[in-house]
Amino acid sequence: MSYKIFGAELSPYSVKVRAYFRFKGLPHDWTPRNASNQEEYKQYARLPIVPLVVTPEKEGLQDSTPIMDTIEQRHPAPSIHPEDATLKFLSILIEEFGDEWANKWMFHYRWSRQADQLNSATRIARGMAGDMPDDEFAQVVTQVLTRMTERVWFVGSNTRTAPLIEASLHDMLGLLDAHLAQREFLFGARPSYGDLGLWAQMYEMWVDPTPGSHISATYLNVQDWIQRMHFPPDRGSYESWEELAPTMGPILQLIGGSFMPWTLANEKALAEGVDEYSCELSIGTWVQAPQKYHAKSLAALRQKYQALAGDPLDGILADAGILDGLR
Picture (cartoon, rainbow, N blue to C red):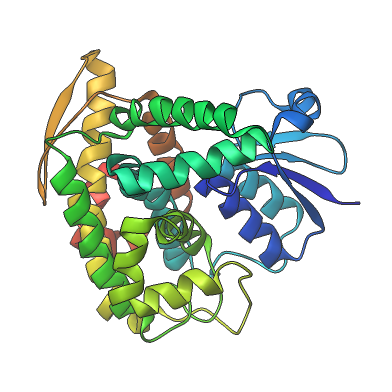
């Protein structure tokens, strides 16, 4: 029997789960969520979000990482995790970074410039509305555009943080392009959780006008990886940390300089009940309203770290400025 994935092409978390199912070779039906299947969707969804996976047993699963964690337990082969505990956690860490920090790049670029706004709003509206008279369709586009541009604050995009978000993306693109010059996936010849989490956000930026033009013009190894991850193949084994370290080490340092101080500051702000917080990142001063989900996500990351902690992982994380935030 087949799984059913309710998703959206413009949802990074949806395409992430779809690529995972493709790698696993699990039968599945990709079902764009729209008005025509809303009743079926509501039967299984606890929250009004995508992706929603309906299992052959008619169980509804939501939230991309828990979906993959659940399916990986039920279908462990082919594994999406390196066997080595150190590499497994680094992959999990990069997946978390993709979900929580790289999403800032994607959302900011998609909704901060007119060309990207109109492109995305039109595509979303078409998926929601289907065929309708031009004047009605234009109204739907306007509604989507208004709703989404008003939500950029949610990911921390504002006049003060916009330069930091864009600088962070270009720093990562350079590091990632160098890393992928020597291998097909982040950890070697087969994909990992880290590939899925980071790729999903990069794919969405690649199909948007402004960031897509940057990637296609300059970062050709990243572009090749983006295309490869649509149907990610298993072409061999994972590499060792010694092989990965020269180009992955700088990527981890970027995570330690931006993502970790931000997520820790967010956790502290929630505990203190403040409406806004600021923190110092390697790229500058970050200002944002706290978000509850990120604290939950950080707690889950710490649990996964505890299960895999030890040498040499702790030394690698300490060198990147990440370890203290996980303890």
